[in-house]
Image 1 (cartoon, rainbow, N blue to C red):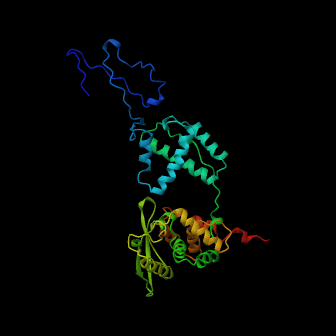
Image 2 (image 1 turned 45 degrees about the horizontal axis):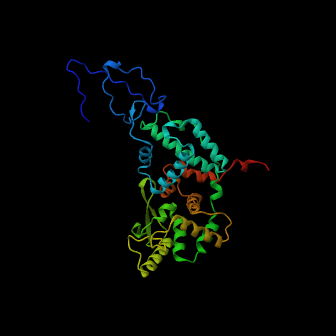
Image 3 (image 1 turned 30 degrees about the vertical axis):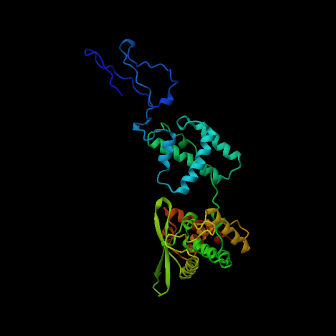
Length: 347
């Protein structure tokens, strides 16, 4: 940009102070009482977008799209996909730039979700996504106000106890699965307590042989979990035997190399998709005569609950499942209490 020249005897004129948020002005032609007098006014530079400043913090984002990109950075692909889906539903609904969204718009969105008949947990998740973005935008100086802080999501009933299968039912689902790959998948879901995304993305290099103290050969699996964190989980000898058998079967078909998927799709030769994993679990559940609508995550619930029932320390279950907080693991003890004041009643 070329420099502005002035006569040598003319002092520089003071610049008009920049408003903290351009969007808060009444309009592009709003009167600015701080402009210099017309006779001394310098040529106006071309109008450029200025970063918003929130509580003295220079904005780190240039526009809404950049803000969302910064917010999603570092999150897993599955998390990004879920957040984007919820967020763009909100953006389509309000049809406003994020800086123009007001509390009433969020409340209308919450009412819209309820009118659609969505479950409280789904509504809470969608609102939580939007609230998280607004908090982030305010924290980095892009948004002057965090309008999401003024709205709360619906209370979600705790139905964890309904999703914990008894050991007998869980064992029956696994035992009656005759396909070797699917049997190994169900067994690993339960024994490792892995998340769907963790198990789906397993490659043979993530499995290592271990020798137990009793002399039995077992193994371990290394998951890449939330936030790119890794954790290794020891497997039972019987589970390791099934995985070894699957490895031999895969090598006989020309697969089973370290960079091949453990649970390979016969159509693509890549990892099974999440939807394919769900179908395998549901088919095995129906085959076992289980009426509940079991999902892969129920195996994770069962691992935590059954291990705690058998006396496993809560911190060990936390470590195995990759829970960030011990309070998350403790939910399973509340879902299946061993004691109650009812035992002290006289009825």
